[in-house]
Image (cartoon, rainbow, N blue to C red):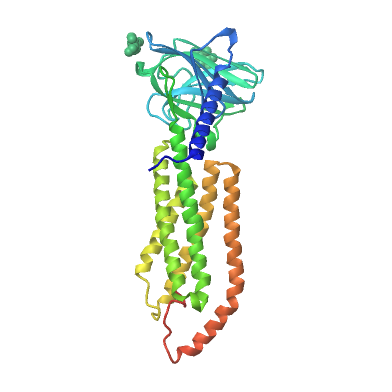
Length: 391
Ligand SMILES: *[C@@H]1O[C@H](CO)[C@@H](O)[C@H](O)[C@H]1NC(C)=O
Ligand SMILES: *[C@@H]1O[C@H](CO)[C@@H](O)[C@H](O)[C@H]1NC(C)=O
């Protein structure tokens, strides 16, 4: 293919320049940091969340790193940094330094191994050696933790974690279980300084999970229900509404199951953290929707006396799926904490679908009543054909 003309290349150059500037700015913000006693560190990394940064000097001979971790926090909160010697992207199994302060502003550091999601926080239980330190200070609205750590396994690549949370009644209390607080880990190479934002790829997949499920269960399925309920009232839309309904529900189901599967995968990866209502509601929605698909195969003939009961069943399961989906999308938004625009957008979509349903309800009522009366008259002489009734 011939080379594309100018604008495309200009856009790429601009993008490159912006990325370069952004990465320089990110590096700059950690490079400009200063430390008490004039200490300096050879390398630094601006961490992707919680406003934190890590500064270190790696000593290959001893397999150790002098580390300074800095994170903003109020005087009534704690911050922590550590290494997970057991698994990447997880709090469970991490050995961490936790800095906090008492009512008099005296800062202390706890060195503790996180054996569960409700850890005992016993001091001096780290899974690696700390040849020097630790020490911590609080100034300018940020904690800094200093320590020299023996990198576990004399390996330069480590699963690092960091965190911030509240102090309650003088005790270290649980950190928030959503948003940035669930993205605070990365694999860091203390030699090269490169970090693999494991958190970014996971965040990316969480966003895909959210968008897939919101479109499938939150838009396609309710739209399909609206089509079935209101379009079939119009004679001219007779077989069309049925195929539209099937198309909406099937594509919604396929996308929704993909989003649901991704959700299960994300859940199995987040060791020790289960988002209980969200998970249970998601599984219920999947079961009900799958039941709905199988029920299609058992649909009695229109004239069958059980068709009336089948209709009641089909409608109640369908509405249950729609209501549970809306509830679960809000649950999911609450966990993911995307920029507030997403929640607003979903509320607008929900309100629009609701508004359309109310309008169509008003428009189609008289038509439906008239038709029902006419069909009742006709029933004696002929068996009506088509989908328009009670499908
Ligand atoms: C760690 O590894 C480096 C380089 O492979 C080696 O020179 C050093 O002796 C090792 N240190 C320890 C404490 O095992
Ligand atoms: C934990 O132990 C270290 C050294 O043994 C000590 O300096 C530190 O103050 C202790 N931390 C707490 C919170 O008690």
